[in-house]
Length: 214
Image 1 (cartoon, rainbow, N blue to C red):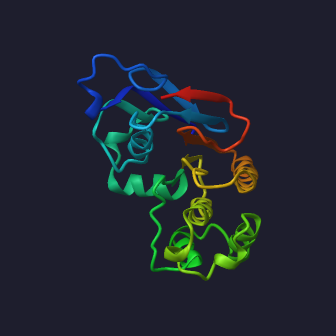
Image 2 (cartoon, rainbow, N blue to C red):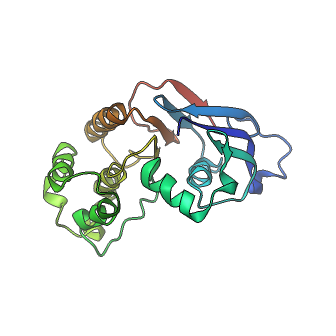
């Protein structure tokens, strides 16, 4: 997948608004593979909705979203499975980890499906993110900031053309934010991938090709 294009897209819940001022909604914009984007937004402007529309688990929007030239509403279940396994990885704002499983078990659920990385690689990422002692602990007993780092590792356990990170550092201190940024930058460069990071103020410190206002 080389590009993702939004053509006059808008969440249906915004349809009755008389004016929407945005770089993304009700316009045409394209995210290109190999480039990094920061999407800055106030609460309630559809930041997480944007991620969920592109990831395909919500369809309540107007306009069109295209993967290359294909309208994503035409994709079959099988095609969406392929997209989520090999082309787009998403770190959810609410993380969606299983609290009754350990940090490592949460990651293995995904990695067993993709077979993308080794146990050694996963544990090395834990080390780089300063949570090497948390791999065997139940996620429900970790702080939200620790859980964010676990969720990032899970997001990296697959091949991708685009990596979406929805408010990835909202609960991280600056030093751990820098560690996350370094790892993300390394992995997107390795895969030649595009990166979309959302923020309502505190964001991943990277050199972005473009900043969008939602």
